[in-house]
Image (cartoon, rainbow, N blue to C red):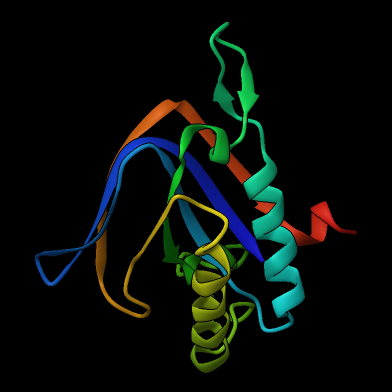
Amino acid sequence: MRIILQRVRNARCFADDHVIGEIDRGYVLLVGIEQTDTKQIAERMLEKIKNLRIFEDADGKTNLNAAAVNGQVLLVSQFTLYAECKKGNRPSFINAADPVWANTLYDYMVSYCQPLFFKVATGKFGADMQIELINDGPFTLYLDSKQLFA
C-alpha cells in the first residue's frame, strides 16, 4: 500500500462538477492499493498516520498528531500510485489491485478511519475526480507499507 499524505488547511474533492468530499485542517490521503494488500496492512498504515506528530504546537515545532488539532481526513483512492514507468512512455498499472479488491479495501479503510479522526470525507472510487487543496507547509509524506513494515 502506498499513501501520499498532504497536510492541508482545507481540501475539496469534486466529481461530475460537484463537491463530494470536503475537509478543513487535516490530511488529504491519496491511497494506492496493491493486490497483496490486506485489511491488516490498511489498519497499520492508518494507525501510523493517526499517530504521526506533524502538526505544529504552540512553539512552532511539529509535535502534535491529528487528534490534538481535531484533524480531518479526505481519503481518495489513487491507483496511479502503482504506475510502472520503466518501459516506454505510457505507464503500466499492472501492480495496482484489481478494482473489486481495491474498492473493498478502500471502503474498509474509510470505515476504519471514522473513529480515528474528527471528520472523514471521501472521493468516489473509480470516478474522474479533481482535488482542490491548500497544502499546509507544504508538508507532504510518502508512506509505503513495504518500507514501513518490512
